[in-house]
Image (tube, rainbow, N blue to C red; front, side, top):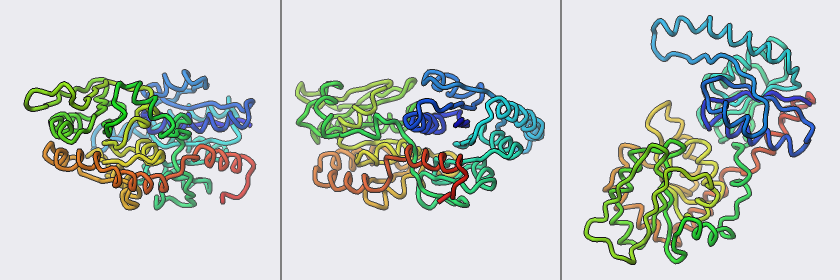
Length: 367
């Protein structure tokens, strides 16, 4: 079987693509997997590094304004679709799988032109334009969250890294705390704004450093490659005060999750899936741009009692100081939230989506 996986631009598209590719390869090491991306995205580095062949087509961003760039879109789309058709003719896949984003539109249109079986996976609770289009062409549609409005949709969850999906936080806790130089007797708050960091989160947490110290709570703060945090401890810090660790970037997020008792984070689909899947109670601070999809991503976990949802503008040092340290120090409440979170989102989405892809390739029923 040959599979063409289309997705790129950001980790939100490339991470589930790679997790799905790995799941398919585990089932059949001889399976031919080819990926489709654009020259602009993260895929140009991470897909070849993962050992998968990458084909490229021209990007077709859609202007949100009525301007000269918008009127160039039809010609750009024709070029990109023709390039995608050429890739299909070279690869001759049994099935095309799209994960949304710029590269998926030409992939969907090329698959339709060549009458190639199509599978669509939507990562966010609110579907994007590309997947709204793709879902019209196929009965094989998968979503990450319940309630996503796409035709024929079946909830598989979001494919994530095996190092996270198989994580036993309790079993790895001692190793994780030692790895980051944290104390085993203190509760730990993990702070992360995603792969690029989030300066509002960084500033509000750092300004509340004295409140965390007063509550006996240690902080593992991932500020992002270009981010910074200047913790304000108020008066002179005691020598036995809880640790406040600042990291620019952490590539062992499995250990970061294992060390944590509570996480403060954005609400991208990957983040929501990972933190809730491993049973980590969360304070979600959705990115305040886009169509509000991040708040919708977090909503099922919050409604189940596994997290708190606070608007970006409301995430102030005052709110943090009055809410987060006390929550982190409340063992019973944390445990209750963690149990609630872990029951919401499946961690075997890579296998579920692989099942759907194999079904599609055989021409079987979508459900």
